[in-house]
Amino acid sequence: MSRLQSTFARVQAEQRAAFVAYVCAGDPDFETSVEVCRALLANGVDVLELGVPFSDPLADGLTNQLAAQRALESGMTAARVFELVRRVREFSAAPIVFYTYYNLVFANGVDAYVRAAREAGVDGILTLDLPPEEAGEMKAACQRHGVDTVFIIAPTTPDERIATIAAATTGFIYYVSREGVTGVRDQVAGNIPEAVARIRSRTTLPMVVGFGIGTRAQVAQIAGQADGVVVGSALVNCIRDHLAERAKIPAAIGARAADLAAGTRRAAG
Image 1 (spheres, helix red, strand yellow):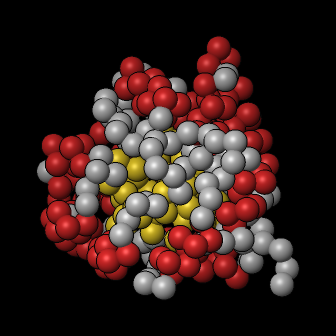
Image 2: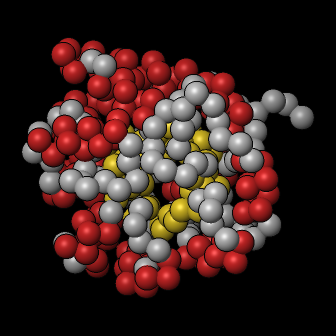
């Protein structure tokens, strides 16, 4: 059983949803990023989703675009991202999933990239702009090296494609609850229960919901419907808000994570 599989089984037994936290690797600098990861994993995060900084992040809103820019300007490279994962592995065995773009994988050689990710300690890879119909080489490399694949389903995904996406996925389904890009929203998107039911009728894979979730109440709302809840921009904002005093970032993001994690427990019965 993979780390992801065992984590979803554990949180289900604990009658709660998995808390999946997104931050950009290397934001705002390498050493602070290590401590950010430590703080998140010490405060209720079950799965760490590391954004691999990219100069053209198509699916990201302004918050995460600026995070990627900060990371790149601080000197983050593919090699440094792998080094960050190795540092996290010194203190945590929690699942780590890369949130990346195919150009970053392809440019380094698909098999070589996946092998390096696995050797560093990565458990899964979500390649935002790679549709499953074109992911043959990526899926094969992940299977060879024991890395789970994660694919996205959107509100606009036709019913007939859900089975295709699920067949390409070994880790979990990521349901993007809104059209557009990442970012904090005042309200959770509508029709999530219907979308979850539609997806569940076609796959038994764990399903997480993300995009636009940023408060404990919103986490609680999703936790009653999905296997996991993804929070990104609300956490990245903790980094942005303390750039002038970077030593305060880990404590700030840890406190925010603990508050959000409290929303993952489902009501009894």
